[in-house]
Image (cartoon, rainbow, N blue to C red; front, side):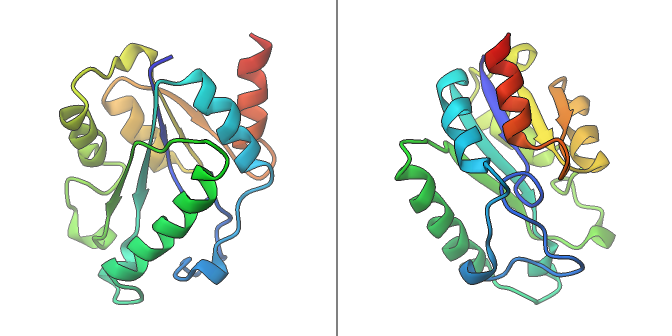
Length: 162
């Protein structure tokens, strides 16, 4: 398999009801997400995170706070010998109608420009919302919608079984 695109909130970490994960103390991995990433790191050539973060646009958090949160997340992941190739985020409010906020494909298109050897037909986007799935489908990715009942780990287990 080629490239795995992952949404963050609701896929890698738990969402906070009606709130934004702003600090490392609020960040909690989804059940078995780390185990899933270990499996998926062996199956996919690269892993890229694409995440809407409109808390920045709302002034609830800063770019620096998001960067620190991502650095801490990557430290945990790297300690498990997992490589995340890049993290893309959209800081804009939904009302701005930018080109990068999912369902718009801007973050995916940027990744495709940054990694021109991505083979879309062998790549997946995993998300927990319809906007994630729409973004992935718009550039020709295979898509999978996860939830609290069907997690990234469940999907990874299914890949092993193939």
